[in-house]
Amino acid sequence: MDQTVETPRSGVFHKFSSSAGSTEALRFWRSKKDSSQEFSLQEREAVSGDERNGDLENGTSTVYRTYKRRWFGLIQLTLMNIMVSWGWLTYAPVVDDSAAYYNVSSSAINWISTAFFLSFVAIFPLCIWVVNRGFKLGFICAALLLVVGNWIRYAGSTKPSGGIYACAMVGEILIGFAQPFVLATPAKYSDLWFTDRGRVAATALASLANPLGAALGQLINPLWVNSPDDVPKMVLYVAIISTACSITAFFVPSQPPTPVGPSSETPKMPLLPSIRTAIRSPELWLVFGTFSVYVGLFNAVSSLLNQILLPYGFTDDQAGIGGAILIVVGLVTAAITSPILDRTKHFLLAIKVIIPIVAACFVIFIWMPETGSLAGPYVILAIIGAGCFALVPIAVEFLADLSHPISPEVTSTAAWAGGQLCGAIFVIVSDPLIADSDGDPPKNMKNFLIFQAVLAVAAAPLVIVLGWFGRKDKVVLRRLQPRQEESSS
Image (cartoon, rainbow, N blue to C red; front, side, top):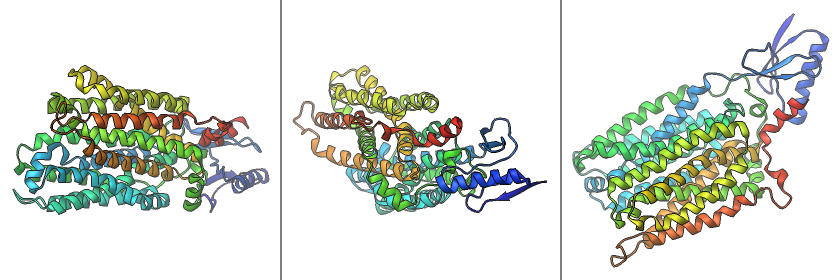
């Protein structure tokens, strides 16, 4: 007679025969989990499309399966990433009209964006703790902060003229607080709901939705605002869309009914031991440093592209097209490379190839604006976008693999916080590097282009040396090891 029992340690249901041999096999697998902390296997009849692993004792089939409901959570995470980034760039595309509406300078509007970056850095330790307790709690925190932040901004924008700048700033900070919860969660969500054949693509979809939101803000917000009086309408529209995209976060399943693979069932380290282990790993520091610098450089060049190109005779529209090329080419490239790397697992090789190419492009970009031709800047921006967008999901997943069994949100949140901090610093540093009115041309940003090129070149060797000096065993993909061990057995 068959029975179904639930083991209290894992919450996984095991179907087995009441015979002595089957009972002994069940004990074998439970003791295997207790001793190695690597296995918790679900035994049941195989279903088409599921992953199987054999039971060494009696030949039964162990089945890992994925669930269609995982797409609901992934779409929800993607939508919130879009709206967080759109909220960030609500005012920047219409900076002059926004400054006139709130009766402040353009610099004050720019500080709203900078506050968004710094908000991430301020809250990311709390974010790690929250997401470590469960990604759904992170979903709920992000949804609440996103909704409240947007409506606070609108509360200060209800008058046709003369908005409340403090409300705009406070609302932006709350939206900034929401960002780490949606940027940190993709790695943890894909680890829990997707197999190793789909993690990179899932992480890419959710993570790269963030710059897609920025692109939507840059393209759509200027269409809504023709004068300062239109700013309240723009803020209201963004608030409504953000609310619609956030409300369903409360209905996302907290975890799959059964594990989708060996790595998703592997117990993760507690939070404090995870942090202590991570800070002792030279490999994690090397990837973290490179990721932070290049994300910061991408954020800076995205924010300052108009100021970089306009002194050389380019128009606002041409600069906007350059920004669109940066993002669209990057999204297309990531859509192509992520599934390929999901299958090949050549994460480290891809990083070592991409980083030097992007660094070289930052060097070449120093002289592109002064050519006066659109082709040069557009081509270099396309390559930078392709490299940076392809790098993001690879680096996030590589960090999760290097640090396994540390929970993925620890490394991903810290890496994103480093990138946001670098982006804020680079934007602030750019101001004193702008040429004077007597420059050639006036107000050009060539000094800043040199500054970012030096940083890009200086950071490139950090990942090149990964696996050198007898440390090749430190860069293995640890999340694949349980699967490989079971396959070999």
